[in-house]
Length: 288
Image 1 (cartoon, rainbow, N blue to C red):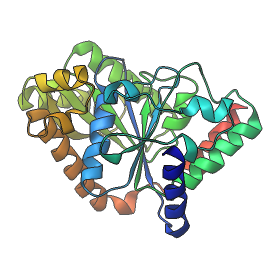
Image 2 (cartoon, one colour):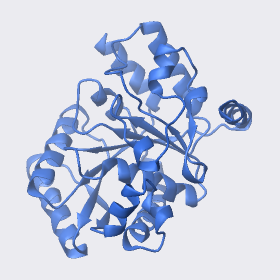
Image 3 (cartoon, rainbow, N blue to C red):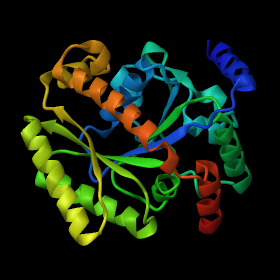
Image 4 (cartoon, rainbow, N blue to C red):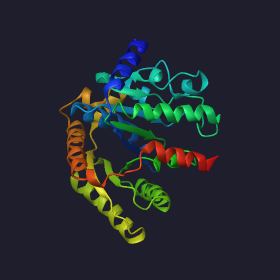
């Protein structure tokens, strides 16, 4: 089945000439629902007829497999340790969502054999022609390795909750990125908000802090309510948008995806002109 899927993807690549938009989903701390957002946002975009690849880059501690109740045959670890291609390690998730598992047992991909990393770069460039979106679910916080990926993407979505510690850590992560990239577009998603008023207040605090201390503005992508359906879906190891499609959280994910696509078309002319792969190559060479 995996081989059939890889062959279908290769056939699709023969005729497609698109370049996927790259999005990093990150948070300042763990436990704020980042991976859950990445998964449900990917499925919501897919419902809008977009081709999506969800790439779990919390390498060695990935959560996507757990959230969907599956054990993928291969992960990014196998790409480096078993010399498989990226196409071969793509798994088929719920509703046919393509994803690459973060796996276990690999702490970094930047300190490995340079030839193998170059192969990774080339094959990732290949995948950018097969999808509309490649969503990188980053590990919590920022490491020396993850910053290279984060600074290479077209856009960053930062997940926070109304908790002061979550907001403080989100701001610290954003500040770290702004030091290295003055024009990186940011969007904020407030998760586990008791209501929209709390979500708006949380965003406004971050907005004012960024404007005052970083001279940067940020947009609110959406507010996800503190819905018990999410915890039930996590326990059942199913994405909430499929588990209970009519609950408040699922409706929020759908609204966020629609608003995002509308906003993307409006901002299309301002999109970063330097491709993800070119930027990642540059950061990789600097780090050698």
